Image (tube, rainbow, N blue to C red; front, top):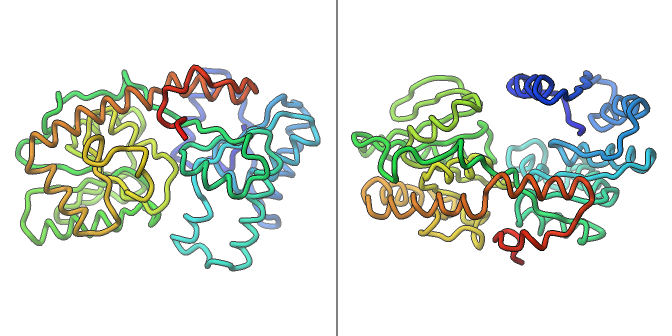
Length: 346
């Protein structure tokens, strides 16, 4: 499994993999003389010579890793499964990394397509990502949908479909402080409620500096083991992303029975609006209205809470998705027993 440089917040997780499962991790530093793709290819090539892998795949970074993985798999005659976690290129456009049709943008598009062409199988973590990749892929039969899923025993509803906070309604955002995640829209919604003197707090967990600003409570990075308690201390989740695969935080929040406010352009057709979550356009007034509905209508709140948990049980069970992932990695591609899952419905 190839990945880029391990960020500080993930090092504890990698240490767990080494200790618990005897995973060997070969780390290397990127040099400024080469591109990321060249760095990965040169450094990984040396490792491939030693271990001669049967399967090559990636953890994240399909755009930069797809081509190196493809080249190495063809040379070493290895089975290559490319995992696409989201639309990295669109995210870079949204946050201003580069402009549309710039040299780097066109380079990334070509690099991504080459990675798709070289892969034996491509895993996407959401149906809309599968549709996007199909447009750039030379063989749509290699495409498979496989989400991470959620541990339904670890993430569960501890509040019995009731408000977690009777005195103050708390809305939770979990994610990076990055524009594609839509955190700035959530801040604008919070500012609206503060100006109206509404007793609604907005919590931000992720790559934020810890601070309290009016009704915005920035919690900083929350460790994985503390996430179930975080969800259950909140009343609802808001994630109005501009681009997204299938966010893990949504799966976790729904498993905890939290009503969710999410982007319509991403989830329309896969999650039922007003039943399993609220689907919204990226419009401040519309998002404000949905927050008010949840805060003021207990019957509606409880309905969404119950249905969110049911959706997680039926569609997001980690055990089901782990089995699918295992079969893709091993080249066993018969998914007949999983057709009950909505995400496999065309």
